[in-house]
Each structure stands twice: as C-alpha cells, then as structure tokens.
Amino acid sequence: MVGDITLLIAGLLLLFFGAEALVRGATAVSLRAGIPPLIVGLTVLAFCTSSPELVVGLKAALNNNGGICLGNVIGSNIANTGLILGIAAMILPLGVNRQIVRREIPVMLGLTFLFVYFMLGESIGRVEGALLFVGLITYIIYSVITARKSGETATQEEVESVAPNLGRHWSIDALLLIGGLGILLLGAELMVTSAVNIATTLGAPEVLIGLTMVAIGTSLPELATSIVAAVKKQCDLMVGNLIGSNIFNLGAILGSASLVRPIVNEGVTMVDIVILLIFSMALVPIMLSNYKISRLEGALLVIGYLGYMAYIGVQLA
Image (cartoon, rainbow, N blue to C red):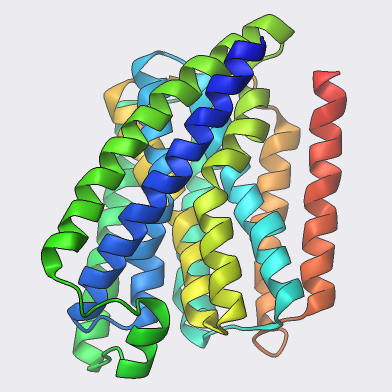
C-alpha cells in the first residue's frame, strides 16, 4: 500500500512537470503564430493542460480500467469548475469574455449533456466516442477559423505576459513538447497502475479513486496555470483554459479512449452525474451576472466542491 501511494505521488509529479513542459512549448509556438490568448487558452493550452487526463484515460482504456477513465474525466471537470475556477476567482474577481458565454459554454454544455445521455446506456461505445471526438474537432476548426477571419492577433504585451521567453530558439520549444510528452506517458503508467492497486487494497470501486486522487492529480496543470494567470490578471487565458479543458476532457479523452476500447460504466452513480451537471450549468447564471465571477461566487464553488469530496470520502470510508 505504501509503495503504491509512493508510485501514485511519483506519477502525479511526472504528470505535472510533463504537462508544464508541454504547455510552455505549445503555448510559445501558438503565440508566435499570432493566435489571440483567448483562442490559445480555449484550444492549445486547454489541450496541453488536459494532456495528463488524456494519457491516463488512454492508458486506463487499454488496461480495461473503465472506472479510472470515467472517474478521471468526471472528477476533473468538476474540479476545474468547482475547485480551480473558484480558487482563481477568490484570488481575483474574473471578468468573463462574452464570447465564452455565447459559444464555449454552450459547446461545453452540449458535450456534457451528450455524455450524460450516453451514460444512460451504461457504456460509451466506439460510435458514441466518435461523435464526441468529431464534435471536438469541429469546435477547434471553427474556433481557429473564426479567430482568423476576425483579424484578431495576440499583442506584444499579451505575448510577453503569457510566454516571456519567446526570444529563445524554436528548437527549445520542440524539445519541451517532445520531452513533456515522454514524461507524461511515464507518469500515466505509474498513476494508473498504482491507482488500481490502491483501489483493490481498499476494496473501493476504481471510479472513486478516479473521481478523487486521479482527477485532482491530473488537474494540477490547470490549477497551476490558472493561479499564475489570475495573479497576472490574464482572465481570458485562465477562463478559456478551464472551459476549454472541460471540452477537451469530454471530446478528446472520452472520445479517443472509447474509440480504443468501449468504456463500460463501472461505478459512476447518478449522484456523480447530477453533480457534474450542476457545476456545469451553474456557470451560466454566474457568468451572465455582469459577465464577472466574484470572490463570493468563487467561494461558493469551492465550498460546493469540498462538499462533494466529503460525500466521496463517506463512500470510501
């Protein structure tokens, strides 16, 4: 048990540092291309910070550990909305770009409702996975085309505030991308193996481990990125990153993982699904309130998340 916990922590650290390297490399390349920070946050940065969930989800699917994969995605989306967005808003009241409310929130809710519908059938097959994945690709293409047609580009000030080391050679960014991916793969191997062993030892369903330790661990890149962005007052980047991460978790992770192997619902309850829906839908009235997330609203999100974790703790006890 102690050895598995040690491996789990080691896997978490590798996921964190691997994602950090991937984020730095990919973000620098994107900003060099003149892509606005909001689009970088919604697409490139969201994908990179969701890379731990992706590699863990694929590894779990290959190992036929559907509970880990489902718990990881559901738990990560809840953590992104309740814990991370809440903490960021408590640090700095967040102004919300109107585009996020008009486009990204509906896309996130659409994928969430589609996922919930699929879950009513007790499994996500390859056809369902393909629909989720195609929906994500369509969203990415539309976002990039729209940004290009609008003529939006990243200003020099925005570029320097997000990626201050763009003066370095592009080969360094390439090394960060490749090295980060390799570290992520190793971290995922350690995390999935140790999480399954811990669940077996505790006699707990794999999904509960996925909803808690694995979900929080794979959300560390989003947490680190959001805190830094909030301190730097980069609200577009931070909010875009979190909403984009939720979209990627549903479309890329569940989509690709179920294409590899159909994912059977092993332990996800209606309570977990309802909590996911509540946190996702709560963003609509919160963000429509003067297009701003206040410190009080952030605190309520965090309290709600801690309440859910307390409920999970009771289930594990």
